[in-house]
Image 1 (cartoon, rainbow, N blue to C red):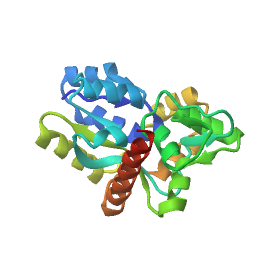
Image 2: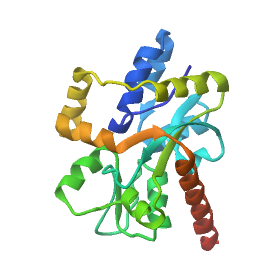
Image 3: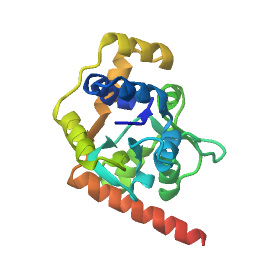
Image 4: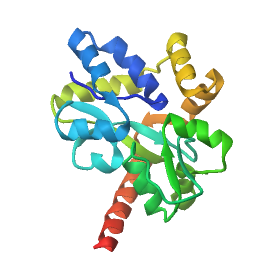
Length: 219
């Protein structure tokens, strides 16, 4: 298995799961080598450098994907729009488009830096803005694969069926890196869920239709 690794707090449970699940040394090495922000992982996946990864929802429509993804209902804290000049976050694909679909202008920030930023400034939570419009959770990313479909589906289902406890030493590393407390990190993780059910799929379909319509308006 060659899996891309988004090095964000919201996927810490999956990272811990993979550390235990992957048995071969080259698989674990790939997990450390092929890591980065969402936009980078998207490119690794598209170019075939990794066989599977959690990729942005906006990219995922073209590929085979599981029912495991990054989902937030009502609020997420790590995907925000702040006042000021309109500016995309280069780490993102889906979140930048989400702001456009919602007709909102400002600076998009995602990931761990957004968690810290939103503590200090008045910014809009984009998951909450989506919920205000559609009363549905928002699917930010999905676990997709190009090869060994059965194997990766089985891996995704196993993760969804078994809750993961994050060891303190890993939490401590992310506390130091993000400048967030243990309590703040655990609170944030409670806002994230990973199973894509009927409501989530409906929400994703709406979003992808809106993205298509937004692109058509530019033509």
